[in-house]
Length: 163
Image 1 (cartoon, helix red, strand yellow):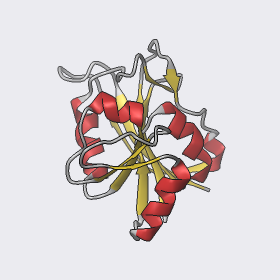
Image 2 (cartoon, one colour; image 1 turned 180 degrees about the horizontal axis):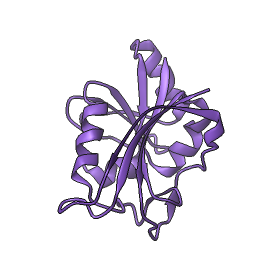
Image 3 (cartoon, one colour; image 1 turned 60 degrees about the vertical axis):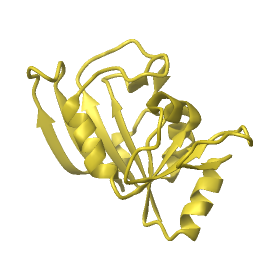
Image 4 (cartoon, helix red, strand yellow; image 1 turned 180 degrees about the vertical axis):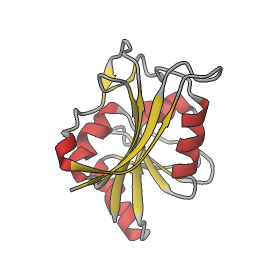
């Protein structure tokens, strides 16, 4: 089973502030939907609660240390290891980690693919993605986009695979 991380970060690897996204990029949301629809996604409880509901047409796994935590329409486990074990029993080909910061830190060394939206800005943030040593990764695809009326920042979709 492949483990991949799906993330959008700024020039300083910032991904969130006060449990919220740092920007509104409609094409990034469409890209995220295209990447994750039909897949098994894993997120931490805070990320799930910021979304507020299961993402449709995906298997949603929520990680919470609270053994009594419930999320309707989701599978709740208490660790990344439990999420991986469950996914293996379900014959999942690609397990997609979608946040937040703690889960990215725990899973970074396990992943083989990064789906990154590089947002060309520097924002105030309290959550950051692990710093990437790009010499350890191959670029599989890169698709750059300029500022327009719906997108305040330049951004690039990049897929990396571990060397």
